[in-house]
Length: 486
Image (cartoon, rainbow, N blue to C red; front, top):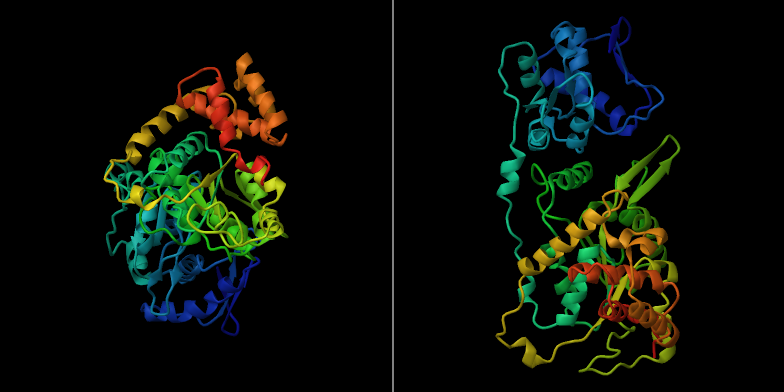
């Protein structure tokens, strides 16, 4: 910040966006209402580096501190010890901003280890170890702290204690009556991180089952929790110091491709990134716009989203489990045991073609769900709990973790062709069975590797080193769309 003689004005240089330019109008009242004299000369604020576009209201507090330092209200040597971030209100209060956690984690790599941030963001910054984060409520409070007139202790939160006290899910798989075949398919999908498509009539339980999938996923590790928390922090939806549960995102079928994938003039994470390390549930999958569905290709394939703009490129992680649900036909009742379908064959085929081959290529498991008769719903039979299923899932994932420790992947679903040949070892009988299925059950060639990957996961659940015939048979059952439709 430079203050020189001339007509009173504020200029901000260094490619500021509109939000940064508007800080000029917030600075003067914020400084005056905090009890300080605003300089009457020409003020030039340089945001370096000059070739990188500056976005957001994060710069209000550091610019204000720079102006006060130029007036010798604060010593420059003191300022040099800190990083500052925060938005100023007209009365001088400091407001919260998005993205504090990734900022502190990134700037932690530099020589400075002291941060002054908005009080409302203190729970985010406080979880970062080996740095001092000082939360402030106003510009006046910040100045008094820097001049030694006020004591502010750095905020420290114990992540391990927060993790120990995490709450349990409110839903459980034991609430789902019957549907043993579907539950088993879900268990296989979660164990090997296989994307899954559920096809069933309205009221068959697709949504109820999908909402319970996070309850059988292994608990978040600290590394995974930090990844999710950073994304939620940037998006402005973080409600606590750290995310403790795996995300479950369920966008409406009218969502745009930008809202789903991410983007915008100032790139922000979309639903696929908000579901990172969790579940992305797309209900009424066939009702999504074709372009929106096709935009899922890159995140499903690469586990990340790349957004390119004129002055740079942004990458957001998006490694999630896709759970999609759709009706079997336009009216929804094709194949239902209780109601009759009134759709023509051409209408049904047209409806199914909304899901393209490339997208179905990225979905390992597709199953049909039938509505349960009323007598099963009123039975008092004890169903298997989420905890029991999760224990089996964790064992299968441990096997995969050991198998792929030198491969750069974590789950069976992520194997490439070479890895499938290496790790999906079939017995002679299994090979004959799979060959017979390809030739006689009209299963498509593209499903071949998918079946082997799913069979590998089923074998892991059985703690079997080789893929046995029963594993192949079960995997084939989970490829209903590869068979002849009618």
